[in-house]
Image (cartoon, rainbow, N blue to C red; front, top):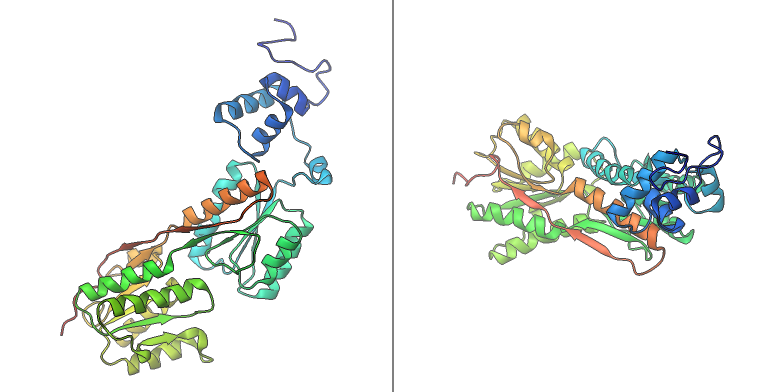
Length: 348
């Protein structure tokens, strides 16, 4: 065969770089469709994507990233801002985000704000300086989200919502998950159930506290104030505050820990005191992390689809980048209760 092989147009000068137009002609599609197929922005049928990518490979097409950035069309970068990478929750969330975005041809730039609103805003400014095509974040305040939205950067909030208009969000039904956890303890025969939480500023914390109270009321049980410990309101060390709380909670037979951080503190304190789980005190946690399956007994936990949350957040961001403006929305994912050995009927 000559230089025209299998319907593929080969540039006359083989040393010249193949252009997007060359790829589009080889794949028998428009340049805009070829661009969407190669960038991952916007919808393209899967069989057409494969045809375009195959043509790009045959022609040795390499996108000019610097030209795209100068034109303002795409930098190929997406920012991800989380609150604490030492927390396995955020590591799993980041894995879900990266899995989806890398498949779409994006590079993820990760930043940790350590729960500090000023650091979060600095991270947002860094993403703007990079000309990131979009940003996903678990907000610790409104400033970072507001800054990004004001500059026209597509934003998806995950886990928590700041209330800023103009961004999409993916969240967990925290109220439902907490209610299921407490209903499980009630079904075992527990009547004095405590809850330990470390924040009620965000909808996640408020929802879990509400779910705890709703479950008690539905069972005809009183929601006793002294059975609620909010570590976020304390000025002393959380370990000390939890120890004082357990000293006072003499009639409590079960404790609902509102997240994995609190659950770990509670577990360690009960073990330090020599209190047997579940013989002396049943424990249920919101969040299901690896250590909860490895301890003895295993911890009954409300499992969040964290990887899916990150992946779905990334998908929403890609959709927003592809279509531009339009109505924003929130997707709420459902958790599930995983029953293990840390919850059982009370002895008395």
